[in-house]
Length: 401
Image 1 (tube, rainbow, N blue to C red):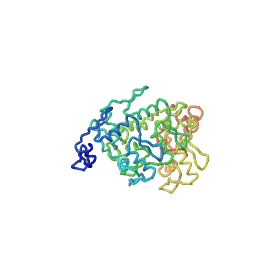
Image 2: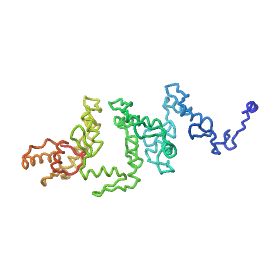
Image 3: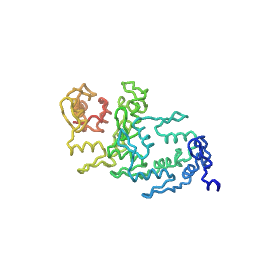
Image 4: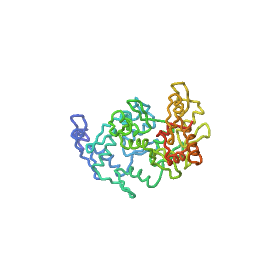
């Protein structure tokens, strides 16, 4: 602007549509271009903010804490975290946000909506930022490459997270137990096990989950087709890997093996829980006594000894118990169901422990061998090796009486 316009206050580049000096907003022109990447901007100040991503400069500093940023508007939003003011509130849970756009992003967790679609491959997401990152996989080389494997990434922070797999570094530590994580996201997910928080809720049926991925999978039960069908029962699913896991119930296959003992399981998650027995990890501690355990479910059950709570009730007779597995066992007295079957004779029973007692008789009378040990994973393996098969049951739903 020349001296004349400075003195007169004249604004020669006034927009006739909105009163703004830079009309390129309406024309779509982006004259300010980054000399290090393909970014371009309508305004010079936007380019200046963008350049900080390349230089690492963060000139805007919070006066309350050590937070620094390259974007002045980001600092303004950050300052609200010190006041605690979050005017945008979710109507389905207790979430509230400083920015309206954050609330919109959050709502996708409840609705499962994925309005952002990639024009190249059809990838869909609930978040614009996720789409922007995805699009780069089609248009840009992956600049950050791992020097130990073939992994490459668009963002340096993605490579940093990946490198933790090679280094074993776990800088994020839980303040309630000994858990350590390689990423902040993994720690956040773990913390939900202590708090019991399940922030991701289905808007259709009220289902809640600790994980956004869990909610996404659940939402498919309302909307998605289930092309993968079991050829031995009526089960069907939208994912082949889930069908593969289901088929194990029919085949009895237990591919996950403990390297410390003979324990085998059909479920990788069960193997992870079992491994804690050997490590001696017992991160879940009772705050009312010295009890500690490797599993949160066990702690929840233990806590009922302090509270006296018995949430599982028989609808037939009013029997109450603190454990669902106990209720399942009790229901056999009403239904007469006998799911445990001897593979040697026609004996059937409603109780796993009763089947084991029966099998000991076979072992002693027919083979002359010593009776089997009490029901255990090892004993179960021995029986399988002897071709004594029982009905396939979900072990998580039955316990010994």
